[in-house]
Amino acid sequence: MQKQYNLSKNQKIIFDIIDKSSEPLKAYSILFNVQKKGIKAPLQVYRALDKLVEIGKIHKIESRNAFIACQNSSCQISKATAFSICESCENVSEISNSKLSKYLANFADESGMKYNKYNLEFFGLCKKCKSK
Amino acid sequence: MQKQYNLSKNQKIIFDIIDKSSEPLKAYSILFNVQKKGIKAPLQVYRALDKLVEIGKIHKIESRNAFIACQNSSCQISKATAFSICESCENVSEISNSKLSKYLANFADESGMKYNKYNLEFFGLCKKCKSK
DNA sequence: AACATTATGTAATAATATAACATTTATAAG
DNA sequence: CTTATAAATGTTATATTATTACATAATGTT
Ligand SMILES: [Zn+2]
Ligand SMILES: [Zn+2]
Ligand SMILES: [Zn+2]
Ligand SMILES: [Zn+2]
Image (cartoon, rainbow over all chains, first blue to last red; front, side, top):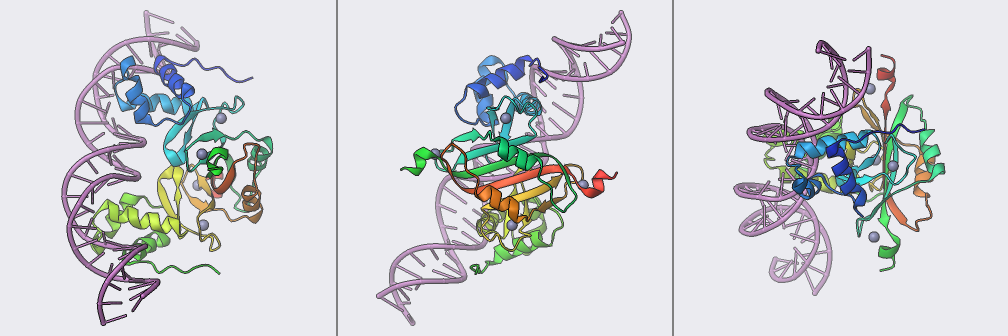
């Protein structure tokens, strides 16, 4: 069983707007959209984002500095993430493929390094954009 | 055979400093270090970085906003990159593992997306930090 | 209640990256 | 060699992303 976290007021507000969005959201775009709800400063947004990332409710798309809700109920701790990103329309989706995640979770090379987390971003053209 | 690029003056200066560094360098730290060579503005650094990334001489570590020289002479186009990052000492190294790169290059899921590039970052503790 | 932990509010500032425009240098054709 | 084109440079200003520092309030635990 996954631990349930009770989101705080700001965390709820910010999670909701990300969860409803059809695309990854950037911190300052979130800020702009929640100002009517009383969240006025960047730090309020970043603090909520940090927490939401930490507990796995959202993920950061590093190459885009943007945040997306976890589409994969199983990854409650964001330690194993994979995304596909369309370089044309910027559509992003979380990849949920157990073979891939097993392969990466078990990956070990000669470096002797012990991995406990990974982030993978694939880039290409989505179906729609490919057929244009 | 790989195409040889003749680096321009600024590109050489900036590649050299990254190549000599034992750790990934950030753009403004590069800027600071090349000011004595006449490179005065951020844009001059970012332009060189963009080009060097494009031709695969360096890679960007997205989670760190830092740049590292390619340690893998075969990836002259930076379309397939994998790194291991120590979360304690921040040591970063490029993973060169043909099984991994083949696996990822051939990865395809049900989304019908055609991938032409990926970036993978593993996080953990390096040998040194693990034994502390 | 007392204490510790987590979250909030606010202002200022740091760090990262790009836009816009003028000029120069390198490369390729004719 | 000259003209055309593309690539690189220089410079100023500005946009975008993220953190520091400090004060206060809410929440959870003993
Ligand atoms: Zn997820
Ligand atoms: Zn697309
Ligand atoms: Zn490389
Ligand atoms: Zn280490």
